Each structure stands twice: as C-alpha cells, then as structure tokens.
Amino acid sequence: MLAKRVDALWQRGRPAVMGVLNVTPDSFSDGGRYAAPAAALARAEAMAAAGADVIDVGGESTRPGAEAVPADVEKQRVVPVILALADRLPGVLLSVDTSKPEVAEAAVDAGAVLVNDVSAGRDPEMLPMIARKGAAVVLMHMRGDPRTMQHDTGYTDVVGEVHGFLAARADAARAAGLTAGGILLDPGIGFGKDVDGNLRLLVALGDLAALGYPLVVGASRKSFIGRLTGTEVGSRIAGSLAAIAGTVGLPRAVVRVHDVAETVQFLTVLTALRGAA
Image 1 (cartoon, rainbow, N blue to C red):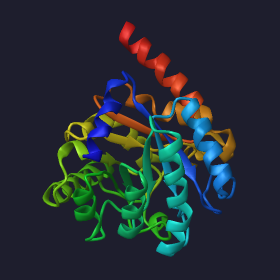
Image 2: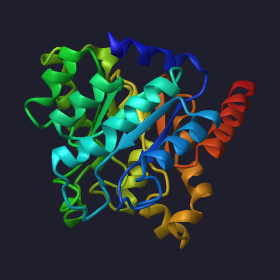
Image 3: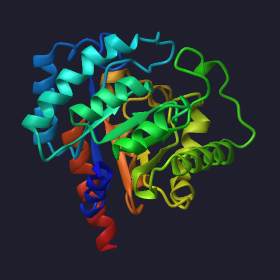
Image 4: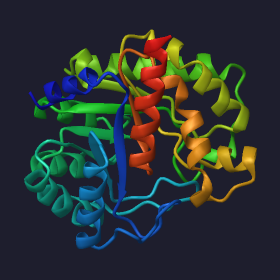
C-alpha cells in the first residue's frame, strides 16, 4: 500500500517537513512564482535538497477569498509536475493538495502517496477512492470553503469543536476503508479561525495527538503571525518557526512550510535540545 510509505516519516527523530509547492497564479505567499513546470520542478528539487521529506503540490489556491478552479485545469497544473517529481525525486514522498476526487485520483496515479484535503473528505467520492488506491489522507478542519471561511471565526470552544470534527472525519475515513496509519489530522491553522483561535489550537496539539493519529500543522507565513508581529508575508520566518515549536516531542507530526532549510535546522536543533534535557 502507498500509505505504508508514510510510516517512514516517523523514524526521523524530528517532525517531518512538508514543502509547499504552489503551481497556481494566486496563492497567498508565492502566487505565480512556480506556475511554470520548469520553475516548479526546480523549486521542488531545491526543497528536497534542503531536507524536505514531503513535497505538497497544489493547483488551486486556498487563501481566504480564493475562487474555485475547474478540475481539468487543476489536473493540468499538478499531474505533469507530480509525474516528473516521481521520476526525479524517488526518495521524497509526494502529496497533492486538492479537495476534488478526480484530481486526487489522477495525482495518485501519477505518483502521489498522500492526498491533502482541506475539506476533510467531504466529497462522498473522496475517501472511498483514497482507500481503494491505498493512499493516505490529510483531513483538515475548515468552516465553509476558502471563499467564506473567514466570515465566521467565533467558537465557544475552538479546541473542542475542531477536535470533535476531526475525530468524526477520522471515523468516516476508517468506515471508508482507510487504516489508522493512513489518516493524518490537521487543525486548519488560519482556516476559519482568528488569532486567538489559532494560538489555542497550536498550544493544544498534544490533545489532538491523543486521538491517536499523526498530525499535520501548517502555520507557515499565516496572517495571524502578521497580525501579532506587524510583518509582511515574506518576513515571517521567525514567527513561523515559533508557531511549530509545539510539534517537537509529538509522536508523529508533519509541518507544512514554505521555508524548508530554516525549518529543518530549527527542528533538528530544538529536537536535540529537548533530548538533552
């Protein structure tokens, strides 16, 4: 099964690092920079050389207010890149960032082993397809969709509500035929949460890990860091690293980041310090 390749991520001693590869013209951080296939491949190879364990290829922006992209356009963006990377980077796991089953299936057939679904498999065809293909899935919490998610960021108990939602979606994935090792949970930092909600979720990662599934944390360059520090998107490396410090010591964790080299160095040293302590 493809999902079994994910198990190797937990042997690294530190959280695994997923490099973000947006092959879109409109992502919030690097829109348009890697839309051309040659630029995307060069970027992926640079992230792999910097220590990325996973490359996450996305053909549709999920920034707040982003418009949906037709499935055929999304496939045209991601499938050729994944095909090429599967050949060039056999030691790196490939992920596709999509909520469309037809895009996910084409990406898995091209070489992806992980489907990173910001809608947590809400399309009824998604989870059965992933199970049938033997791939793994990231189930993320998000209210609404990218166009509407920031319209309502209030929660009575953000940690309890997010954890309850993800537990239910994990149960749905198990019912669809996925094994526990092929299910990863993402609290959806920045997706339908305000600054306080993001902070509360980040300090409660241990509670989410207690559900028994690996975690994915994507806080890299997010707007809550800018609101706390007054910095623009390209100047949030330090804040991004601070936001993922809580992943060190978790039994199974992946951090989704734009700045791979800095993240690998940070996690390696912090893991060593925690070990020495």
